Amino acid sequence: MTLVASPDRRIHRQRRLAWIGKHSIAIALGIMFVTPVVYLVLLSLMTSDQALTSDYWPNSWHPENYVRVFEVTPLPRYLLNTVIYAVSSTVLVLLSSVPAAYALAKLKFRGRNPLFLLVICVMMLPPQVVTVPLYLMWARYGLTGSLAPLIIPALFGDAFCIFLLRQFLLTIPSEYLDAARVDGCGEWRTLLRVVLPMARPGIAAAGLFQFFYCWNDYYGPLLYTSENESSWTLSLGLASFHSVHHVDWNLVTAATVLAMAPLIVIFFFAQRAFVQGITLTGFKG
Image (tube, rainbow, N blue to C red; front, side):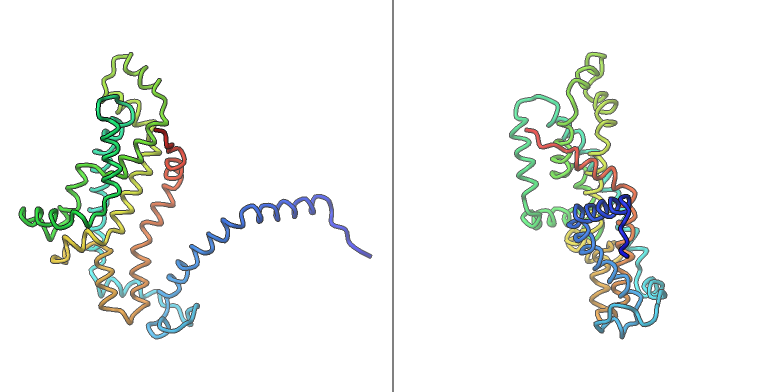
């Protein structure tokens, strides 16, 4: 006697297989990206001896590795410096980049297109090209060894943020801006009252890009703060920690997980605005 599956069960199974087939690439990519992070967490919970082996699963769990990281390295100070650097730079970049992007997207003036081309050229310029003159300038003012050379340039905007915001602002219909001008709003009031509320997803995406860049920045802190450990950020502190504890992979990975955790939490809560900002960013001329 053979059992025949009910039509509802058969349809449900077909839908499930179709969903798996449709999302198979996304599932494979998700597993590929999550697996190293999971292994990193497992490695941070091993003993120092087991961390040097090829084991993938801890023989015994050691969450005290995370406590020991705070005992052998000034991680809170590195974290505070990183937060100061990332938050200050992000706020200043947005304050300076939004008006520039608005001018390039919605204001008509002579030289607008060459100026936008200049922004693209600056975006493609490697930072190493201007390293020597910039370092000499900051050294002349006595600001090396601090976070000032990393934060002050944010006052002048960021080429990538200007480009991203400009492309997003192009998707906002100009009729809204014309209606605000007819009602007597100047350009600044139009920007603050009309454009900013409609551009929140794009601003959130640009802000997250800038925040993540500053959080992970290693070259800038190495160049300007390497002589003063009290100004080190997480990236520079982790590199130094790795060189000192290169055989204690459990502690190195525990410190790495602690440095990654804030970014994961921030992206988890802000991913909707981030994805919306990237999705709605057009590439109009």
